[in-house]
Length: 227
Picture 1: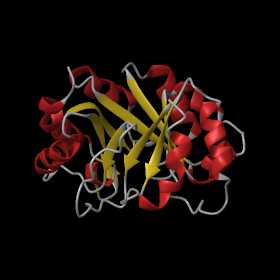
Picture 2 (picture 1 turned 120 degrees about the vertical axis):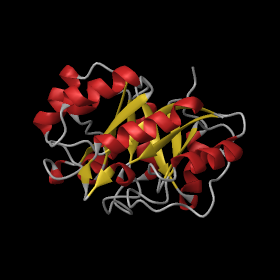
Picture 3 (picture 1 turned 135 degrees about the vertical axis):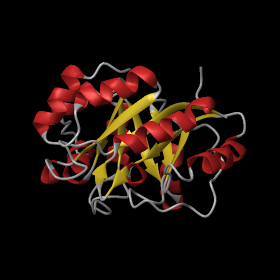
Picture 4 (picture 1 turned 90 degrees about the vertical axis):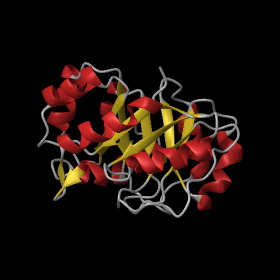
């Protein structure tokens, strides 16, 4: 198993883009993932439009992702592409967060993914999303994130093996004190597959983005990173 990215989610207006650049200079495999939900912009974990624009302009690292949540996800699902998406290569579609269940047409969503090959779309995946797999197998620009936690910081009972034909990543409950043990478990599940991990709550202290924890988990994860 080799890690292509270590994604760190939840930077917000309380975080300096200069600090994110400093981390990326030492750990070029870091992927900063921003939560985009206009109805919560400027709150903890959800950066404002101004902060996102500053990040797009001034962040110098290679890997950046945007998570579409709530209204932003529903807009994308009906063809209203958020302008801010243009500054990001990877776009995560948060199906398990923001009360979007039953408010979108899955087939139209698949068509939207296929219509934007310039992005890689990450589907927040759980067992109940199996019905999406046949359509996704025909779409190259997608990935699956095993994420039963949906940002709550809960570890799964077991890390699943990657699904054949899909680039798969892992999230849920990862934090400095358990990252080494769980990377080893993920490595056993993933075998020789390339993958990535993502964490959000595990790099916060009192719900504040904690750069010390970020540095710690990236340093521990570094030996597993794809060179």
